Length: 230
Ligand SMILES: CC(C)(COP(=O)(O)OP(=O)(O)OC[C@H]1O[C@@H](n2cnc3c(N)ncnc32)[C@H](O)[C@@H]1OP(=O)(O)O)[C@@H](O)C(=O)NCCC(=O)NCCS
Image 1 (spheres, protein in one colour):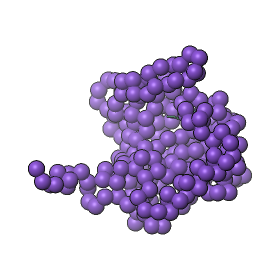
Image 2 (tube, rainbow, N blue to C red; image 1 turned 90 degrees about the horizontal axis):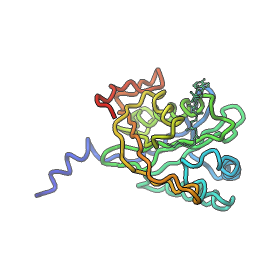
Image 3 (spheres, rainbow, N blue to C red; image 1 turned 180 degrees about the vertical axis):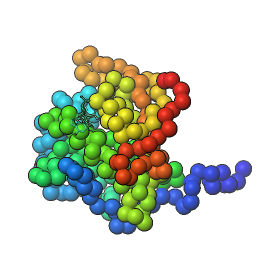
Image 4 (tube, rainbow, N blue to C red; image 1 turned 180 degrees about the horizontal axis):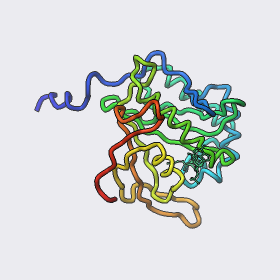
């Protein structure tokens, strides 16, 4: 077997990060952009105050960003990666559009250049939840991610999110964004939290959207529903 199969793995040349990278996305109430060194202190403080609220779904919040130095290092590591070529992970902050305060985080993760896909994740500090800010910010990011590079976007073809079945707030975000429920992954995630009485293995739901399904005017997807019960 030759390398012909490789042609099937991509639609056109593999994705490369646009140069320059897309800058911020502004929505009615938020700004979404990559972290800069100046954000490190505010990011650390926000995570530190939000740990209980974003656990157990963001397990990294119990192991990472435990000191300001960790957050400074995190921001600088991703800044350097984004400045080089071949970066596949672009964490971003969600900021209050008026005050500039850190509301939470999102980003384009685990980009597969051949498939032009990325995973999107999100979290909000507790005092900013329940106001539609996550949906609004992520809708802005998804619109930018699925827009062609020629029009200032990231030129991605497909975005997906993996959400643990009991994480109702996050599943509601996916539903309000109009994403398609594509599958249920059995025992996909181990939740070893709290250590004294771990939750154990959890199923996750996979939601996704294609570039041609994103309605840029409405700021949401218009996906055909998955035809099977899950
Ligand atoms: C997931 C998470 C970001 C969702 O936050 P959220 O505030 O519920 O989501 P939204 O910003 O989209 O807000 C939607 C809520 O605001 C309410 N709301 C108020 N004003 C609104 C408005 N103008 N527009 C939309 N929703 C509005 C909605 O009714 C909805 O509340 P409901 O869930 O009780 O129906 C948050 O729960 C979180 O940080 N969880 C911990 C981390 C996590 O689980 N991350 C995801 C891992 S997959």
